[in-house]
Amino acid sequence: MARYIANVDTTSETFGNWVVRTNQVLDALSSEIITANATFANTGTTAAQRNARLYGAFAANTLVAETALRGGTLATAANLNITSNTVFTGAAINVASNATFTANISSSGANVYLSGTQLDVLSNTNITAQTLVYTSNTQSFKSNSSITVIAITGNSTTTSTAIGGNITTITSNTTISGANVYVNGTQFDSVSNTSITAQTLVITSNTQSFKSNSSITAIAITGNSTATSTTIGGNLTTISANVVLSGTNHTIAGNVNIDSGVLFVNATNNRVGFSNTTPDATIAVTGTANISSDVAIGGTAAIGGITTVTNTTNSISTSTGSIVTSGGIGAAKSVTVGEILNVGGTTNSSSISTGTIITTGGLGVALAAQIGGKLTVGGTTNSTSTSTGSIITAGGVGVALAAQIGGKVTVTEATNSSSTSTGSIITAGGIGVAKSVQIGEKLTVAGDTTLTSNAAIAQNLTVTNSASFSNTVSIAGATTFKTDYVVDVYANSDLGVGIVSPLTIYTFPKATYKTGKIMVQAANSTGGYQMAEMTVAHNNTTPYITVFGTVASPAGVGTSSPLGTFSVLISGADVQIKMLQTSNNSSTKVIAHLIK
Image 1 (cartoon, rainbow, N blue to C red):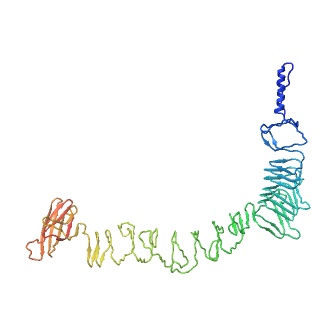
Image 2 (image 1 turned 30 degrees about the vertical axis):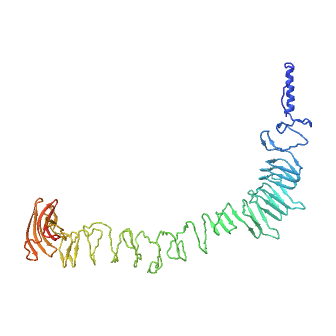
């Protein structure tokens, strides 16, 4: 509200300087300085508003703020501090922002409204009004240890008192008396001694918190002479300090949460949780539970985690051990027993559903198993490999007595036999075979061999000792006697068409055999037969043949070789015996005695 204009120096300045200074004073009076003259007051206009600042005190009988009264500077708003006793006598008082009162305040009027983000009252406050409304998010009333901050009493006509808001915080001694007391809001906090005298006390905030120091009991609820029951109701009850409840009956109608869920009572579903605020059973325990005495469970016990029994009592009967049950034990998965598993039942097993041990799955035994009675396997799966069948073992099978096998026995192990203690099948006794035996390679017999029936040998048969054959011996391949003498048989059922050139009827390797005696039986389609015997020799280059015996049937045929003549030829590595047939489609059978 002040502007500095320098004085005119009459000794050095001119009349023009004096005129300039005078014009500056007049300009300031008309455009900058706010005056109080009723007719010519300079307060500016809506378009050209005026700002003024006064350093020091400003006094006025009446201070009028048409729009707002605030603290701070011209540029920035701040708290407005009123540091002396203040009397508000209007019909309504509205405080719409943060307000701090540090001295005695007396407010009277029909309605008193206090609104803003936060209301702090730090001294004695007396508000007389028909309606007192606090609409700030947080109301805080504080005083020293000897002053009661709030005393709310009903008058002669109305004894009900209502305190409402999102959060109600009482931080010092408070006395509330009246017929009915209602506290409404999101949260109610009482952190000092509070005395409420009323026929009915209703706190409807979502959370009520009562706190005190170590020497003060936060809540003392006692019944009067006529009623000793106390009811605390609500969705959530939180007690964070010492509590003494005295009376005959105590009923908590809502959920109870003690020590952040250490003990939780779910009033909706009638369940109790230990370290569990969402119990899914009558009693739900999250974490470990130590029970030092007996536990009696009348129904089924469902355990979601591991059950550990630390008692180490060994079991020597059905009534001893660390776990004793009068009934059976059902396990949906594997059971591991660290020591002996003793089954006292003596029921014999006649099927897969009878006996002292019954399992719907397999039975795995890591070490030896001793079975005193018969072992019956009901599985009928045939075995096509070492991993299929009704009995599968990764190791060998030892049988002390006879074993009867209804199906075929297949041994896939391919170890060859070079003695009586080697091979894929080894037996300390004999082998009895009711039917034929097929041997893919040679059969070596160290002792005498007796064949009482037909013997068919598809490959080589080597006999190093005496052999007695009392019946027919059928040999499909060549027979070797003492290494150097071999008997071989070969047949041609149809030599085909061709009577001009000789046809091959038998071959043998020239590198293996040098000489031989050949017998040939020839037959034609008209019933004629011829038998010829010949000898053959060669020196790997030139072969020689001598036919020294020929006979034909029927007799009277006009030549010595009516069905064919014979010759010999070396072709590559083979010696070939050839016949020139006299009629097409002849057949031959050859018996060759070959010498190496």
